[in-house]
Amino acid sequence: MSPDAEALRQAALRSSWARDQRVARRRLALRWLAWAFWRYGLAILLVVAVAASVVAWMLSISHTSQRSPRFTVVPAQHAASAAPLMPSENTPPIRQEP
Image 1 (cartoon, rainbow, N blue to C red):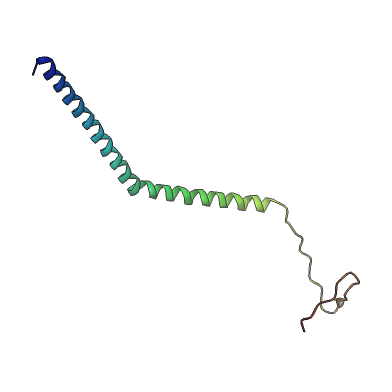
Image 2 (cartoon, one colour; image 1 turned 90 degrees about the vertical axis):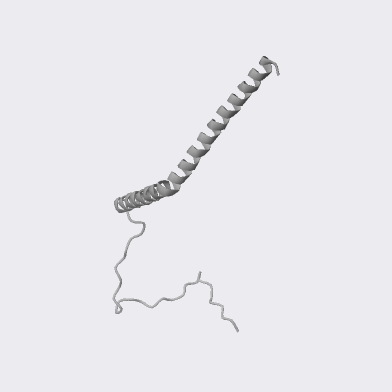
């Protein structure tokens, strides 16, 4: 082999080795990140989600307590003063099954 071919071969080997090292470091970093996420990230994510849910719930309670009620409660009438319900002319008759 000529010196130029040998130098080219050595350069290619060095380049290939450097690329292999970069790929190995990247794969190792991804493995560590995946492990750390499964170990700590899910727990942190769960705590944050529960905390956000509690805060949203507390805010919704405070907003509903400051809002006017959707309906008015009318006191019940005593049984002696209650008039019997009579069907009106607009009320259709109740259909009974044979």
